[in-house]
Image (cartoon, rainbow, N blue to C red; front, side, top):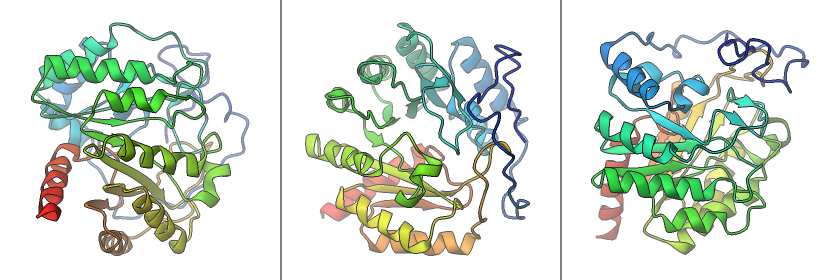
Length: 318
C-alpha cells in the first residue's frame, strides 16, 4: 500500500490532501495473475541515476506503475513534465494533488539530454494537468518535442497529454509540433466519470482525439482505459466504437490497481482470458493496434508497439 504522506519534499504535506478524510475503500486481494518483480537490476539503477542527475520526474514513479522494474531495466522511462503536482484529483491516480509551481524553462533541455543519455529510439512524454496555466502547458509540450527533435533527430516521440479542457487553441499548438504519437487516455467509461475522473468530460476527450486527426492525419492517435472500476462490458464496447468514430489508431486496456485505501476501490479483477477477448473484439472494430492485459499501461512497450503500429498502417494502405 502506498503511503498518503509525502515524506520526501514535505513531511507535513499530505500527498493527496483532498482524499485524507475519505473513508477507506477496500479492494479484494490481488489474484495470482497480477505479480511483478521487485526493481533491483543494474539497468534499473542506471535509469534511476540518469533521471536523478537531470532532475526529472517520471510518471513511472509518481503513479506507482507496476511495470517500472521491467521498463527501467531496459532504460525505458516515461518523463512527466511541468512538475509532480496535478491540479486535479482523479479518484484512481496516485500523482500528488495541489497547486503546482512555475514551469522550469530548462526542462525541455533536461528531457532531451536524458533521452540522449538513455539512448532512446522512442520516448514517451506525459504531464500533470495544469489547469492553472492559460494554455494548459501546451507551449511547454511543444518546446519539449522540438528540443528532443533537435538533440535526438532519430528518436520518435510519443506524448500523453491532459485534455486541455477550456484551453482554446492549446491542442493546435501541440499538434503543430508534430509528435509521432498523440495519446490521450479516456481512463474509464462515461458512466464512471463523476466518481473516477470528475474534472474531465468524456465527449470533450473524444473530440480532442478526433481533432488531432483532422489537423494532421499522419499523426498516430492512441487512448486507453482501465477496467475493474465497476464498468459493464457493453460500456467498454461502446468506448471502442466512440474511439473508432474519432479515427483512433491504438487502444490500450489494463487492470485498475488501487494506489491507496483512500483511492477508488477495485470492484473486480478481470482475468486474462477476458482481456484476450476484449483485444480480439477491438481488432474487429478496426484499431490498427491493441494492447489488453492486466498489466497493460499506456507507455508499456511503447517503442515496440510503435514499430508494430507503423507496420499495421503500411499493411492497411496496400
